[in-house]
Image (cartoon, rainbow, N blue to C red; front, side, top):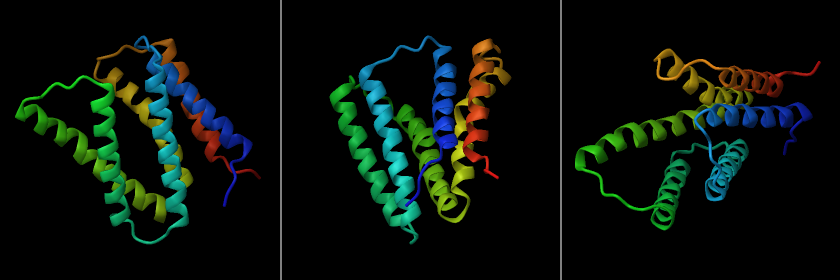
Length: 168
């Protein structure tokens, strides 16, 4: 199949460290349940990417089934772990518009890019998500620049460079 080189493992650890530093700026409190669910989510995504590397056929049916399973799993976990509050119809529509639509489109585009493009480049670009979020907050003056933002940014950039670097 494939193996990760030492630099990709190092990049993975640096990326996680960078994202953790960025999230810790807001007073991150760790919850075992939250960490376990986040780890499970990351593992599921990694397994899906490996599956897509192996299966080259068109994926719309697979993607629909995966989204349906994910939706049912999330609904069950929500009912089990969280208190339920019924939103207004407007709030529900807004949540669907900003949550479901971009997520579905993002997953579809990621899947196509992963199958047809350079999976390594897409993976490295994924490291930039928490960094871009933090920088957007700074640009919108909703957050102020800080040492932890700089450290998190350096970790993430190093993670991307290390993971994508070609030996030779």
